[in-house]
Structures are given as C-alpha cells and as structure tokens.
Amino acid sequence: MIRYSIATIFLLLAAFVLQQFMPAFTGLYDSRILLVQLVFLCCAVTVSQPTMLLLAFIGGFFWDAQCALGPHGGDPEVYTHPVESMRFGYSILLFGGMGFLMQGIQPLFKQGKWQFSAILSGIAVFLYLTAEYTMINFVRGDIVVNRPTLLQMAFTALLTMLFSPLIFWLLFNVANTCDHSINPQAVKKRKRAPR
Image (tube, rainbow, N blue to C red; front, side):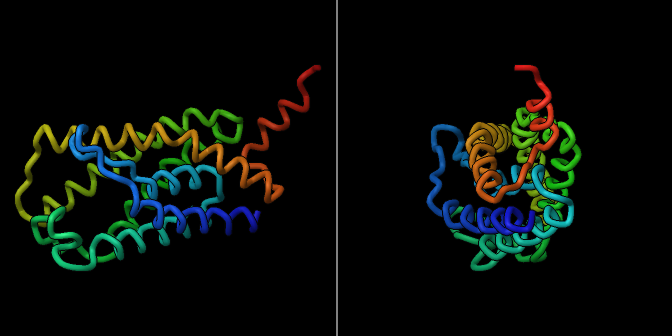
C-alpha cells in the first residue's frame, strides 16, 4: 500500500513534466489534454482518502506554482488579463473537490468497474475548468460566458477523458509491480467464478 501510494506521487510529478510538452489542439478551440488533472483523478479513485488529500495538495500546489507565478499569472500571450488577485493555493481546493468526487464512486471501481471512473474523470475535468473560469471571472469583476470558451472547456474535458483508459492501465501495472490490489472485490469475484 505504501509503495503504491509513493508510486502515485511520482506519477503525478511526472505528469507535471509531461504536461509541458502537451500541445494545444488549435482545430478544437485550443483545447488541450490536462494530463496532471487526469493522473490525479485516476489515482484519486485508487487510493485511500488521506493519500488522495496528499495528492490534491501536491497537485494543487505545483499547478499554482506553474500557472499563477510570473507575469499576469503565467505566459502573457496566454493569460492576457492580470489575475494577481487570485490567491495562491486555490487549486488545492479544486483538486480536493475533484478527488472527493472520484472517491464517491470508489466502491464501483473496487468491483472492477473502472469505466465509470473514466467517464467521471471527464465530468470532473469539466467541472474543474468551469469552477476555475468562474473564479477568475469573479475576481476580474466581469463574468463573460461565450461559446468558444465553453467549447474549449468541453473539448478539453473530452480529450482528457479519452486518455483515462491509458492512465488506468498504467496504474494497474504499477499496482501489480507494488503487489497491491486496487480493485480487490473484482479479484475475489474472478477467483470464485467456476472454470
């Protein structure tokens, strides 16, 4: 259990490195795959609540460090409006909220029904982007909702969700390497099934 938890922390940190090389899909309203959020969500459903909270803290802290620090909250070509009023650490709360959402369907995941977690990861990413966009607009004092922004959030959530089976496959392999079962009830059902 401890080795698997440590492995999920390293996977999340590796996702931060790989996120830097993920391109934006210009044909889909500059949507992108949010690898960090995806790895966090997939890990959140496979670990205990304290480990999920630790992953939420690490993910939110480094996400804010990567996005909030610097001019205009990041790259001035991407972030055209200053967001200095956004407090460092808000992403920790957003990551925690996503993690609790995934923890809610953990009983299904433990039965071997990982597909529900894959679908919920797309919904969680969309909710994350909506909450972040709403907070930024609230801080700016001007709430603007337009079609391209909604489509960008929807395509980002969809693209991120499509990569969740790959992350789950990786987590199952990591769990096997660490001699840890992330869906013990499914293993019991397979052992009891007649051959």
